[in-house]
Image 1 (spheres, one colour):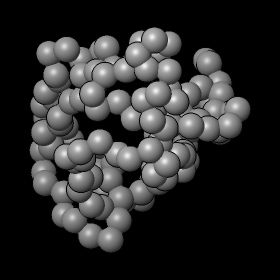
Image 2: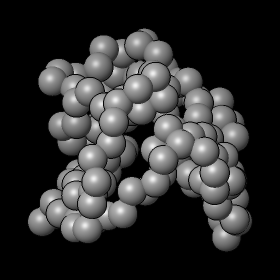
Image 3: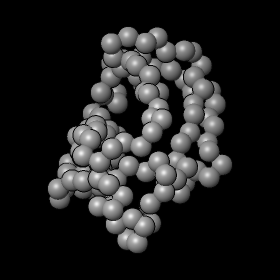
Length: 124
């Protein structure tokens, strides 16, 4: 892994992953979480910090920052620099829960965005 850099190829520090632990229900969006054991610990500093785990639902209208290495279009290349965006949380009702969306379960955060400005392929 690389930590402390927005670049996939340089900066920050790298650590070898020696083991991975996946949720037994991994792969269905509801349980998509895994842990990685590093060969050497990370030292926290201004650029490397732990991610706090939410203990309660995020209120609608709250602005949140999302980030990831997803492609900008289906079949596209992985970007060299981390992509991020700020979006607003929607209520379950605004998301169409439970009638329209199959992703209406505890822990899912529904985000509102304009066309081509979300979290999926093609969104920038």
